[in-house]
Length: 196
Image 1 (spheres, rainbow, N blue to C red):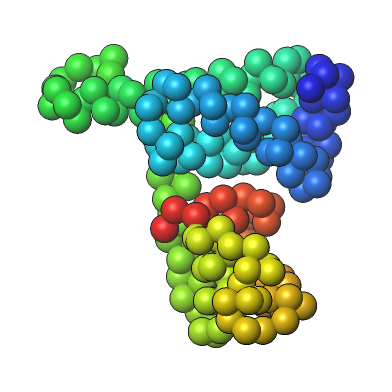
Image 2 (image 1 turned 30 degrees about the vertical axis):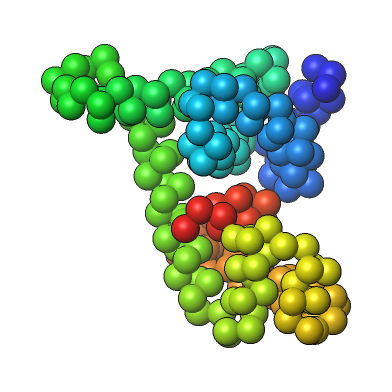
């Protein structure tokens, strides 16, 4: 992961390049996940934090070109979200609503709320899919099954599974775009689909 490559990725993402966003995800997801898991001691919480990190990256993509150290910035963003979660845990444990410094940043809260709203919209879109397409989509995103595994389970061709997934993702993306006015990368939609 060279600084030059990361800056180039950030520059492409700033221009709305979804392929660059996918590359960034594959480059940093596993590494950040390990660090966040160590902090939070929870796989589910760590995955939710990373979901919010990559959502944030996409939402503020227009500013990414100005970031000098993309890797450091990604780690800082993941750490800040993790600390927000830890503060939330501490508040829940201690039930001390009057401790102002324990409040997470408004930006972190609004990103978390936006992620949950997007998940609800994705859930509604998935519910609108025909039953067979919905089943294929859910097996892929929720159960983590490959196209081959889905084809074997449902006794259909891999080609049919691929077509069902492509059609489902296209429908969900268009539904989200119509509801929010924002075009999200398919990768982000798939990430958000895992947690509803």
